[in-house]
Amino acid sequence: MAAEYTIEMINITKRFANIVANDHISLRIEKGEILGLCGENGAGKSTLMSILFGLFQPDEGEIRKDGKVVEIKNPNDATALNIGMIHQHFKLVEAYTVLQNIILGSEPLWEIKKDKLTIFDRFLNFINKKVLKIIDYKAASDKVQKIVDKYGFNIDLNAKISDISVEMQQKVEIIKTLYRDNDILIFDEPTAVLTEQEIDGLLKIMLNLKKEGKSIVFISHKMNEIFKVCDRITVIRKGQHVKDLLTSETTKEEISMLMVGREVKLDVEKPAPNIGKEILRVDNLSLIDKETKKKIVNNVSFNVREGEIVTIAGIDGNGQQDLIYAITGINQANSGKLFFNGEDISSYSIRKKNRIGLSHIPEDRHKHGLVLDYSINKNVVLKEYNLKQFSKYGFIKDKEIKKYSKGIIEKFDVRASSEGDTVTRTMSGGNQQKVIIGRELTRKHDLVIAVQPIRGLDIGSIETIHNILLNERNSGKAVLLVSLELDEVFTLSDRILIMFEGEIVGEFNPKETTREQLGLYMSGAKKDKVNAVKEGCYNEQN
Image (cartoon, rainbow, N blue to C red; front, side, top):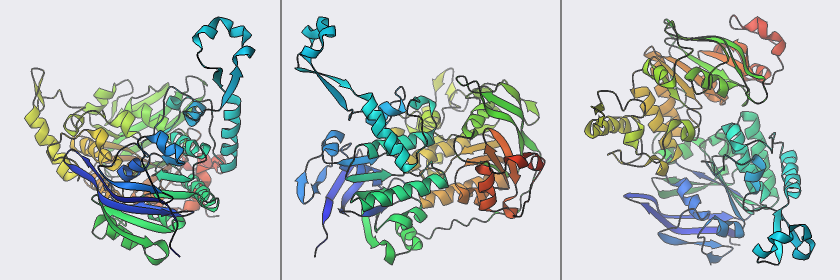
């Protein structure tokens, strides 16, 4: 008996300027299955799914739902067909609350007849319909809260999007789709900024949705996740369909090879560190939340030296982001000192910190990393456009910038126009990340602060970025890494600092500790041991 396809995308082609993002790709999704969609950054995965969700229109090809040809001109058409999408790049209104974002476009309404609105008589002349519709926030809140409770999301529905972390915003995107009771769900890199515990929870949610008869397309670069939940895998490379495979009949190595076109090694070689002088010292740094008046960074002290990678690990929301904001100058610390190469930089502006050799790869590449409507050429000189190399008497040297940009594009394998005129908004998340990393590591620096640097990157790019960071360390640079990925933490770190509730509660040598031990400190179970670990590596065998 032939498989029952709920969605068929047949010979889909999509072009952007001189780039063919999708080249006659065909993809089929069976009812009640989880299909893994794999490929490198820029392979065309998000474009293909954006076509299914109505964000883009195909230049060629057709889409069928339950065997019938359908036309999806916009996301409203997709929603009407019970298709929902969790986007890699969030589609949220920052000025709205979590609840308002979740229900946006699908608000439950009270319907009040005009003859019941005597108190509003003065407005009735402006009302042309027989019914005045008012959002029923109580019903909306109750429905959303049931989803939050059912799936174990810990989130404040009244918080503004602008005030919550990237990780929390990812949860909002997931809840948005669950709220709409869609039958076909597209998950585009939904775990990129989640902790391991949260990822496990989300994968369980996906399996439960499958049991309920939902069909899911799961885009992920994390092979462990793909193999845990997917029934089939479709691989695309450079905009073309490569192969369909049953998960039970393939391997991670085969998928990686099909994605990248070569063998990928994530077990990087890491020679013993050659520790040099202290580059960054943080002394009793504290940051107070303006609204709650509580310390979100509480008397944090540590240092980073030449030739080492120091990693700050912990469950999201324990002050890591705020600590980096205070170090880089995005926010001003309330107390404590910052020293860079022995110089007190506590009161320095962001620009001055950049000029003395601090490079920052931010967590949120859209908010703090790029001007999305600028070209690559403009983005790579955002911090240095007024140097003599790139300008004279206030006039930009376009040829010099283009030459500089081309070097970054080639060295960091940015998939875009070699002329650097590609607008970064049109690029994949992974290639946007490469632009930032290329900019930060090409400019003169002594310290690299890298926050979630492999978020949303494919397996080949992860290998590249890890090797780049290790090369920085091996060449004598100081590296401060913030990561939620324990695999990355153990792969790259020379020292591991655990943050919990705004404090450094443990310092560890990755060679002398375990995931379980780190987990205890990350969850706060070992907070009473803080004093025992602040001066060095605490080894507890239990």
